[in-house]
Amino acid sequence: MRTNILLLLFFLWGSLFSIESLGQEIDNYTLSIDKRDMEAANLHVNCSFIADFQATDTICMNFGGDEEFSIENLAVQGKCPLKYDYLKKDKKIIFYCPSQTRTAIQMDYDYTNMSSFFIYGKGDAELWETSYDEYYYPYIPNTYLDMTINLLLPDSLELISSYNMDNTNQNKYSCKIKNALAQSLSFAFIRRKAYIQSIATIPDTVHIYQIHDMQCSAERYNELLELTQKSIEYFSNAYKEEYMSDSQNITAYPIYLFHNGEGFSNRYNIGFISASQEKFSTYPDIYPLVHEIGHRWLGEYTLLIDDGQPGAYFLKESLNEFMTLMFIRNYFGEGIYKAQLDRCKKEYQEVKNSINDIPLIDITTNNNNTVVYRKGPLVLDRIAQKIGYDNLVSVIASFYHQYARKHPLSYNDFVKVLAKQYPEAGNELNTMVRDK
Image 1: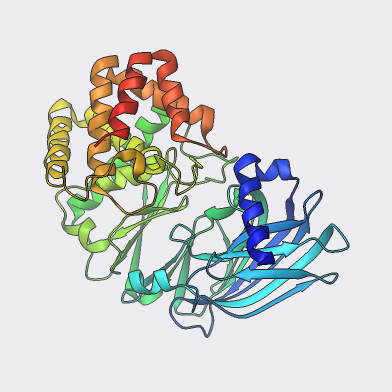
Image 2 (image 1 turned 120 degrees about the vertical axis):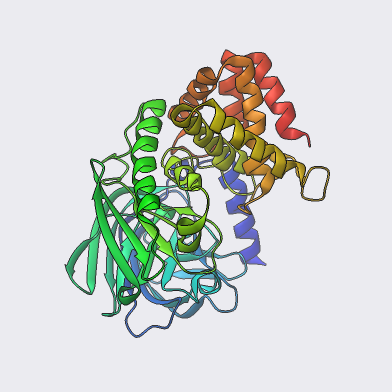
């Protein structure tokens, strides 16, 4: 009962104040991961940090995944006597302020990533990310911190990471990251023998990992390079911000990792983009990879609206899909753009008035919903027809610059940016987003 009350109080405080205003700080954060002698979808983790409680009684961090299987052999130590509660069902760990408000904490445990097992378990790549509620390291969400990362891998595996890591020898990787978004750390472990790597310059270097015997044609390969270069140029110009940014720890063009797992969705994880090898090699077009590039500006690591909040995936996905279509319109012309709009209309019509026809405002979790990716762009296209396509792109860019990497964020913040310049358009958008 005591734990539940404290957790409820934490969430109530969190709805009123940011973490920064609560005065909590996490310093000297070091994450050491050992993949050697571990089965698929398993890691041994050691995490240490300084917790500064300041004026608070508790620090609550995201931690854990599957309630039954994710965490084993958990050992927690503090420099001084430390009390904590690990809430498996809520995927939280709560530390209570000890006699010293600033104290060192060390955690050691084994982690089983059930999401990674079921999505990638039959393939030759294993992805670790926090996006599917797999909190394989403890962190306070939507905060920024400096991290030291160390990884040890067996000879059979190679690492691809969200941030650039030094490879001191074949099996050891390390890096120090400044001011990183706490939940943004992602890894891919790939079987060396299964992959072939190619490197291209467009003009910056692009690394592409493909499965042996499943590689794409030369035509598709060149298409990937062309779309990567041209879309980065378009988005950089539209947002008036270059793709690479030292302050955001983006120091290179994305690595492409094509896998043979059962995962259906493409993923942008800052340093790398992952997608199905089969789809990449065989599908009629690869515009979805342009969408992933667009997440560099509009996505879960920049638009910090919490899952569960109204309109969360209109902001994280519909806006970016519309901007992907704006690239297509700009680069390929009006005809291809209208063909893509027709596809949106056709696929949305297939779910319209069904149980899956959910108002955009009510899609609050990442479930790859047709409404988000098809109705969302149609709604935005209607606004663009009224105020002008360039003007709507400018509004979206303005929204990005005002709210990127800031928490909390709400759907209403976007409506306000639009309505400030175009009041009628703001009202019309709001109506269409809230209605079926």
